[in-house]
Amino acid sequence: MQEGVDRLIRFLEARSAVVLSGAGCSTESGIPDYRGPNGSLRKRTPMRYQQFVGSGEARSRYWARSMRGWPRFRQARPNPAHHALASLEAVGVVKGVITQNVDGLHQAAGSTRVLELHGSLAWVVCLGCGRREARSAIQDRLQELNPGFRAQVLEVAADGDAQLPAGAEIGFRVPECDRCGGVLKPDVVFFGENVPGPRVEEAWRLFGRGQVLLVVGSSLSVYSGRRFTMRALRDGVPVCIVNMGPTRSDEGARIKVEGRAGRILPELVRRFSGGPPFGRRG
Ligand code: NAD
Image (cartoon, rainbow, N blue to C red; front, top):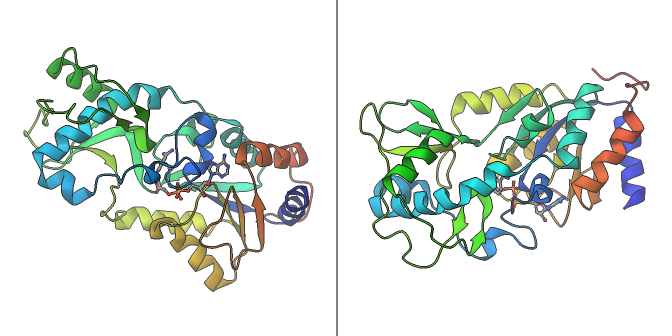
């Protein structure tokens, strides 16, 4: 691994990077990923957009689990990987982060140029009138509507979700939009839903600011993230990867470092803190 880290450091000495981060960047903050060794997908499939909008029962299930999962999710704090990426931005090595995560931990660590490709769990949107509300306000309403709902959390899952005993959601009441009575949905891109076009455009603009694409903690199984490595490989932009386990773009990557992001990225900071003395970083 050390040899890979040294190669990555040498490579970034003369090049700026845009980061594509995934769930693996947040596992060291206690938020499970989908496809790592303890990933949530091994246990259950996440709710699809079509199920959520098409069935009141599915929404009860979703919100019951979310109400119990949210307190743990919102308590998560940035780990050394997030802090390292913020420091690398401050010294000019990193030009920005395109994240597939919905946890807000890059911003909490101090990264300033962050594009949340899949939205943020901190917000809820009305599918009727488009009004956005803070998730914390919805938590209060969930509690008012379901006083005493304390179904046992069997396991904390990805995305602020919690596994509850079978049938726990029966009779669970779901809030509607205060303004129009519409369906409320967390403002994140569900499986089966597309990333909004303007956001993708914004992501491409950010992608264009770096000379290297640095992937951190993503299996790149999902096309919405993999599209960036595909474009990079097509256009001759070098791809470097820091990930525990295989990714779908390992082949073609200029440098792949296997291991924990929270262990590897701080090494880059140690090397680069004090400013970018080497080469030109666009
Ligand atoms: P993924 O689960 O498909 O891949 C995560 C990868 O990170 C795996 O290969 C895993 O082995 C690796 N990994 C785990 N811990 C690591 C660590 N400490 N250091 C380095 N690598 C580590 O995740 P993905 O590619 O981001 O795709 C999953 C989708 O699920 C995303 O689109 C995202 O929206 C969503 N999601 C978000 C969160 C979050 O916001 N924290 C959590 C789970 C899922």
